[in-house]
Amino acid sequence: MRLFLAPAAVAILALGGCYTDPNKQLDEMQKTLDLSNTLNELSSRTAELQLTLDSLRVVVAKQDSTIATLANLAGVRYVR
Image (tube, rainbow, N blue to C red; front, side, top):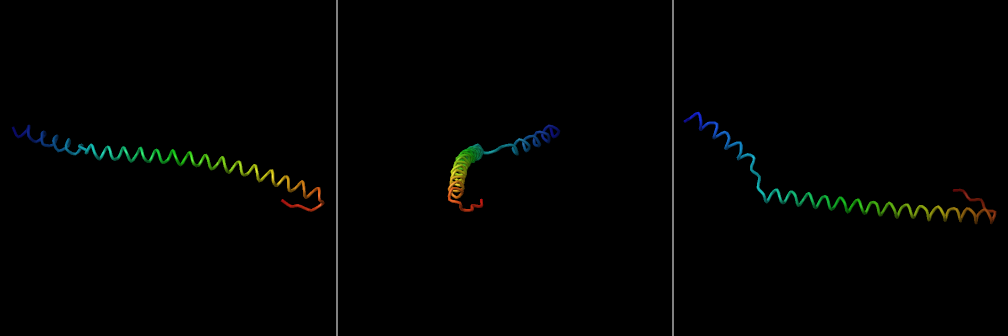
């Protein structure tokens, strides 16, 4: 009888260590989803900012070309 109880006690202790609270698992899953949503939003904002920055670079390049042309027409030295 003792030979049967020792492995059974070890098995019960081992299985007891595997138990996790379902509410804790749900909280962790929710935190993971929230983090994923936040990362997606940040990625979207980063892409939007990159697009805006690229657009501003085009505007600045056009203005620089216009200033250089006007300076050339006026005979004024213009250094970029």
